Structures are given as C-alpha cells and as structure tokens.
Image (cartoon, rainbow over all chains, first blue to last red; front, side, top):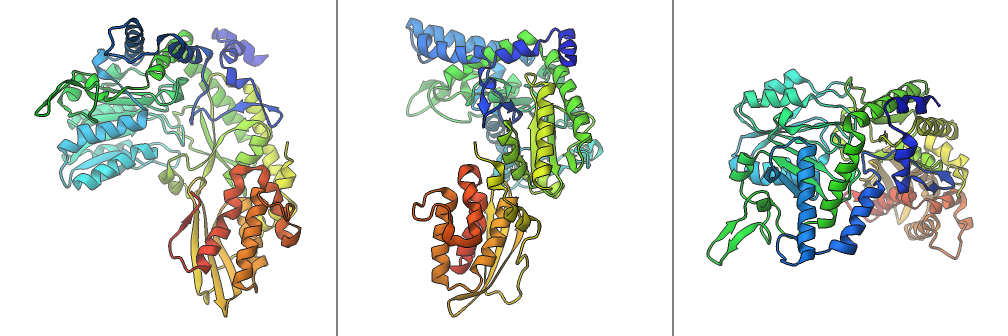
Length: 415
Length: 150
C-alpha cells in the first residue's frame, strides 16, 4: 500500500507499467519471475515488440535506396527514430547520431577511427579502474597497434574515482579519455560533467560510455559537452543489436570511416571512392533496421513516463533495497558510492556468488553472478565474483522483499 | 521442480566447508590449472603418479560449493587408483552430472560421487562440477596450459 501511495504521488502506477512488459508475467520454477538483471539487459515493453512486428509485417524493405513505397516507409521510420534519439539525448544535429550495434561497437569505432590516426608510441589513453571490458580491450588493441599506453584513474574503496588523481593523469601525452558514466559492476555515477571540463581544460577529447546511464537518468550531451557518448539499445528497453554513438560533427567529419561497404559511399570507382556524408559515412552495410525503428519506440515509451520520474522511482527502490540489505547479517554490499544508480553488487559470507545465483533462481529471482565483465574491479576488491541485483522502474518493493527472503534462504542452505 | 537439497546435499556442503586434500604437495610430479571464465572459478590439481598409479592427489583454488566439493571428493576417490581406472571414473562421473549415461544413472557404482547426480537438473552448473576433473585429466596427461571450461 505504501508503495502505491508513493508512486501515485509521482503519477507512476507500477501496476500499469508492469502491464506494458509481457515477459514480466511468467513463472520460473513455479514462482513468479522477479527480474533483477536489468544491467545485463532489460525487458521490452509491448510498444517496442509491436514496432518490430510492424516493421516485419508491413514496412520490411531496405533503406536509403529503393524508390518504392515500402523502402520509403522504412527509411522514414528509421530516420524518424534517429531524430527521436537525437532529441532524447539533447544533441543538436541528426548527423551526430550514428547507429551502431551497441556501446561496444561505439567504443571500438572511436578507438579505431578517432584515436588510432592520432596516436604515436608513448601517447596515452586514460580510462578508469571500474570500466567494463568493452571499455578496456578496444584500447589495449589500440595500444598494441600504436605503442600507446593505457593509464587508469584509481578509485577508493566505496567505488568512487579519485578526481585529483584523474586531474594529475591528464597530461600532454593524453590523447583521449574514455570513462563510464555509470559503473555496471558497482553502480557508481561518475561526475562526468566535471570530468569533461577537466579533460577539455587540457584540450583532450572525451568519450563517455553511457550504457548503464541512459536507461536510468536524463542525459544531455550538449550540457555535458562531451565529444562522444555511446550506449546500447537493449539496456534501455529496446532491442538487442542496436546502439548509438553520438559524436560532435566536426570530430566525426575529420575521422576516416570505421568500416567500408554499401551505404557509406557517395560514389565508387576502382580508382577512387568518395565517402558519404554524416552519419552514413559510419553506417556501412544494411543496419538492423527493425531494431533501429524499435529503439525509437523505446525512446517514446521512456519519454512518455519521463526520465526524471524513472530516476526518482529507481532511487526510492535502491534506498529501500540498501536498507533491507543492511539488516541482513553476513551480507556485504560491494560499491557504496554516494552517487549510485540502482545496482546492488553483493557477497554472502562463505557462499560463492554462483551458488547464490542458483538458489535465488529456484525462487524465481533472476540476478547476475560473476565478474560482470569487469575483472579488474573484482581484483580490486580481491573477490572472484559478486552477485548483482540491478533494478528497473518496473521493479517493486515487494520484489525486493522476495530477494531479501531469497538471500536468507541462501544463508539457511549454507548454515 | 528440482529440490535444492538434491543439489546442495550435506556431503557437498561438508566438502565445501572442509575440503579434503586442499594442499600443494611438494613431491607432486604432475599439475594443471583449471579456469572457468564465466564465474571466475580457479583450481590447481596436483598429483604424484608412480608406476601408473595415482599415489597422491590434491588441489588448491577458489570456487563455488559445487566445484570445491567436486574437487575434494575427486581427490578422495582417485587416490591410489591406476591411471586407466581414473579415465573410466571420469567418464562415468561426466555421464552422471550431464545425465547422459544410461548404464548407471544414479552413480551407484561411483560411491560418494553419486551425490552429484542432482547437478544434471542444473545445466548451468555442470561446468562447476567438472572443472577439477578436466584439470586432473590435463595434469595426468602432462599438459602444461590452463584448462578452460569455455
């Protein structure tokens, strides 16, 4: 009842919202599904599923080439989606919105097309101690290719980056900064506005990995003034296989293409090829058209609720869960930054996270266990792995109660 | 619905809390690492093999209850066995945890190892139960590299 009152004060009916997500209404091992693995991927609202169905049943055609009606409809829907996403993240120009497969591809694109041509041996790329592997490995590949060095901004035990260290690591050798907006393993929200300012004070471009931020808070790339920002569709209630790289137009203009192929050219002869204009220069080959359109539907859905309301609702849930966890004996939260998104990474004394995951699964609770593609974070805390519950606005306090009861059961089995 | 107690049997919980042969014998003449990149489980299996007999076998590492108990019970079972028999036991154990064997579905012939019969209901956990076994086989075959489950 308390929950209903609180949410209705915000005009957010969690019951109505849950009704929009068909996958939430199923049983797992005979128990109602409690889906708390949203940082891995989120469930999809009916509107996104309908957008996929509608494309394949009505508008299926290739884009940017046919003169026939279906191609026109598909092209318009795809480009409308680009415009929606552009507005959603506060960018000024559709040419700055590049469709990619996901944040991973966005980072690889910046590494190879922006950073690689300007790197020489001894130059440095700066990332942080809690990056996802997708924001580590592309830079290691770049370092192997160019002789550049990877430098790491350290963090404290709560999982907060040390800003003074960050500042001192910005030198004339630093060619690019690439930092997560929100840590997937710890939930820490980085002070990215300040980090952009500091990088720019040294004339260093900065890429922000927003895969864990865009689903949970309002993001405005113009206000942030970042040079690049990338995120994945499937973590923000959209389909898999589609994501976005935002880049400032003047930087994108100066960059060579990432991949060659159809759609990214304006003319080809065996002697010379002239590349297409932005954003198509970076969109070689037929993209996942249906997913691109459905990502626009996800943006519509999120804006219909409002990102500020989503953030407030998830903040409430996180607080409720954090308090409930503090009452559990033998359970420790990993990552306790002051500014946190709705991620609860935890360990249960004497029980391996994998066993925690199996026992919770039997209770219908889906969480992630393992290193969360952030092995350096696990090494920092000297843990092989953690269990991670990650919340979305469609989760409820009642589900947190089920999780807490499940963790009690874990301790019982292993007592 | 599988019962959790079928998976987390007392014997398994006991070997998880107090693993047997959890040491690195100085006189081991075989060893190999096992690693499960999915969950981060790590194990090193040591063995002393003389005249084709596993005179001593031990392990170290960190892992979940299933992988630790499996390593512990494996060392208890294999000590003193000829290498040829070790290979047969591994095959039967593998059939037991994957549910692929029809000869002895409950592992009655495997002694204490039969407690792992419940693992077949949890396909995601088969690799936990077999990690130490793969490392053991690599050790006996004299392979130097880390054995990965992926």
